[in-house]
Length: 593
Ligand code: BES
Ligand code: ZN
Image (cartoon, rainbow, N blue to C red; front, side):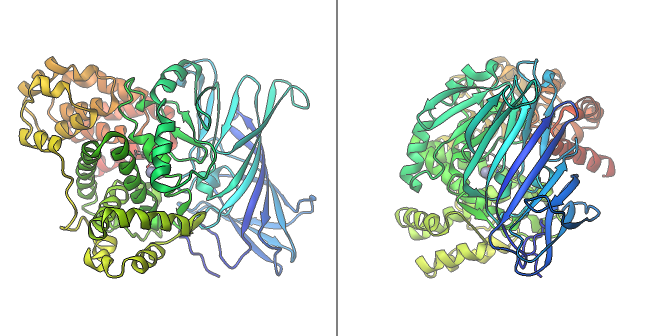
């Protein structure tokens, strides 16, 4: 027996699931999903033997064959990172297993929102977030990206709500055949996916078409603004297809999430999830859409075999995202994004000073929770590595190779070695030229990392944190603002900060990227007048990209540390389980150190 994925109980000598059929009743009152899932195998079990599934916090009620004949099973005690192994004894020839179960109210993949936490304020909301290893808290399955599955799902939901899923919608059944007050929504996922891409949401949702193959979903109060912001999605899809080949998932719909969504975006196939913080009113933060769309090729088609090769998902996707931005907005815009990425990478490497092994591209994560290993390293170091290779072989040849790589590995899961083999076969010697082993298995960033080139970047760097000319700064994009604010040495003089505030009203900014960069600088410079705005942000938004620097700055300063504690106490129950874990960790590290 062998367990090829350190984050799954999957044993590759056992049968593999190829599809599942899920029936689930969504119980908002008890924050429980009552599930009935049938897993179908690739081939009948050859001999009597165990099948190990991943579960977390699931109550198992019955394990049978498709006809209801019981199978023996053991639900093992939970382990901290993996969860509980469900070991089922299959009779020889078994082709499927059916499991009835219930989720826990604290299921790590789910956030149950009270009506007050939504834009409309009247209806509850539920959404899932399965990457990296949370799918097992909603469905018992082989929760490893090595195994792809197709699925059908039937969700029973309150009739005044709507369900959306990262799958094709097949039917909605109201009243007839359903419990009073409930409706059924049916979905089918025709393309095989790794389990971390299983996703759905239930709430008061409305939609608007953006093009023939794209629509935006949002709470009614947000729909207008979301439709305006994302109007350019089809143009972005065309740019992506011109670069990477035909879009393989039929639809690219966008779901505008509640503000507590812990990520900027999540590339759930056919239905990308996007934080509402990108709705700035001026379409200035669409890099997140370019990123999630890019995953339709890099990640969703060509998938990392385990979280240890996560850079294959994210590094390639950042590379692809910047190619789209370059095609649509020009090379200056892409270079500025890369320059900001470089700053974020340097900060991530500094944060991992005591765990340098997590600054490698190829990681070893046995005993490590992927959520704890998460950083900008696989994103930005991964992208810079690809940039370095591109510089050696040339843009045209690199792009042609990328298309062949996507074609060769589509709908499969690969490791870093698979990538290396394919690249070496196309460009013998190129990997050695950039010292690929240093990039992949070395700590930090190699000295030969390419430097983003941009005139606008140089203009900001020349300022060296001094006050910019008002008229010049008025023309800055959010990325230029972030690079500038980030470059101001801390603590900044109150004089500088007050002039910036007087000239640009940064505390009132409704652009979250600018706002959070500003508030972080202000807190790091003891400018206490921003505290009410910081409290407002931390009480509204759950995106970890913003929680981390803001809580971090509050905690770093002894005078505001108790503000952080108090805010977390007040909001912890309304934060997503993953965001809660992040802030909890920041506070613990502060009290321990
Ligand atoms: N797939 C990630 C989000 C993710 C990664 C969730 C790992 C759980 C575990 C998504 O594509 C992503 O990278 N989002 C970024 C967007 C950014 C790079 C534009 C984010 O949320 O910050
Ligand atoms: Zn990503």
